Image (tube, rainbow, N blue to C red; front, side, top):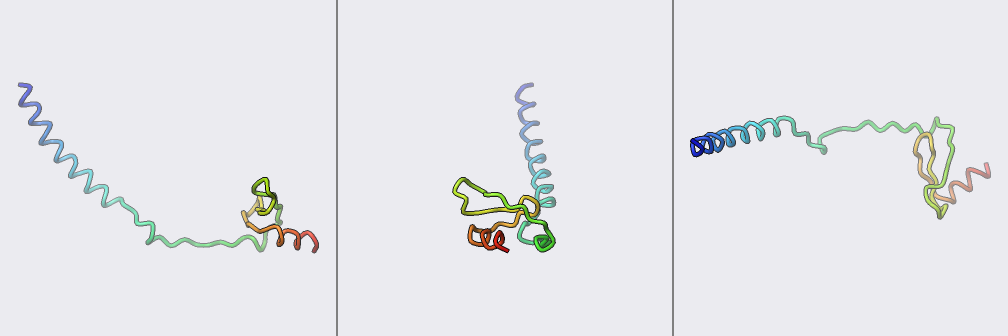
Length: 79
């Protein structure tokens, strides 16, 4: 009896794997085919820059995520 159960499980396993493979290929998404819209909201943002790390060489806006270096940050502060 146990031998028959093993045979049934073996044959069902192949069917289930085939079904799963078929569903996987249908649902697979190719990330290279996707087209992303780039929304540059940094022009209309009221920037609030904070340093990204302890060196203070790179700054990022907390609202829009714009990343700038220290020279650009110093130029913005002078304006």
